[in-house]
Image (cartoon, rainbow, N blue to C red):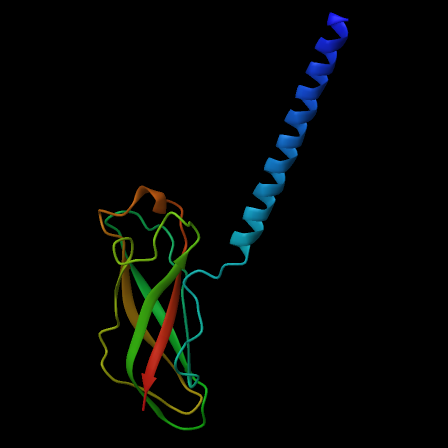
Length: 153
């Protein structure tokens, strides 16, 4: 009788380990799919439907690093526009433990004060992104999602 209870205990342990492995694989697949849907450092403008703003993807951020962010602006209207101000802010990250705040990612807005766009025209503006030396360790491998706005007249 003792041999039978050992076998059933061993079988139960094997089944439990197999179920835990399947649950882990399912979790990893779900996490991978969630990250695959992100479009880091690229977003449509909010607050001005007249100007579409996109950018290059920034990679290789680490404490103390500064990277160039090239913003591409496109006038969606049939009239001339003057972009008075471009706003960039961090709205979220792919890691819940890494806050979307200036303590983890600092953005220097484009210097150009007034940018003129022809009807349906395109232009570029340059901003910079830096990761402070005091950034949280939990931000390693995080992807920051940015939102762009444009104030026009």
